[in-house]
Image 1 (spheres, rainbow, N blue to C red):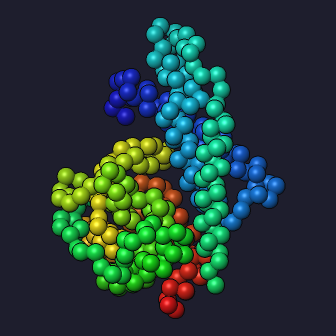
Image 2 (cartoon, one colour):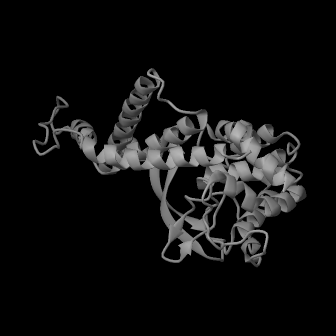
Length: 306
């Protein structure tokens, strides 16, 4: 905002990029709605994944100046004369490279559909030293990530059951939140050192003394999704990530109200969001949708009986 008031080139570029991302998100949403009108929308779970995918596609395209709208806006904002007009750059790309987008979309939608089918087959301040626990047998790293959402629930259940008990939570709340944050274990931050096993998206601030990985991430600023680079904590196992998450909540006073609501899973997540745990304004609703999903409930029931 300070840069915008001073009309700096950096501010103009960011405003233009965010506007282009909003435009692309609107365009993709209209495309999805048109497809749904013909009965091709798929299940609620598929729609949920598509929404997240479309947001990421919009940010990727805007960040690469894919349709040239950001450059047009920036050129207008950086008007050189008193009348507020400036000739447009004739080198701007004339059209959206839609074929490249279609190829990316097709690949992502195959992954979303596969995940849905596999599930349906089921009958702040930091926490120093919290990430030093050793890998335990109830959260194996072999063959990670899980090959399906059902496998994700099954493999995390023993550790989630034990760690959630210490927080006064039901295990499925931890798993649903981890599923949203990590894309069912398949989108954890990764770098040259390998998988971070960071299931909850906890960032590494200057107090964090253990491993870290720096990657691009999706954040929300004033309700607008933006792509940033950030450092995340790196763990030795999924279990270690869950243990650090529990310690992170206990050791941060701002999450006190959330820990008072652990008997009410959805309200617990809403209190986390109110305390600033996540920047996504729909964060609590997304976790609640996973918890209420029939397929997720089947996977939890199977894990409990096992």
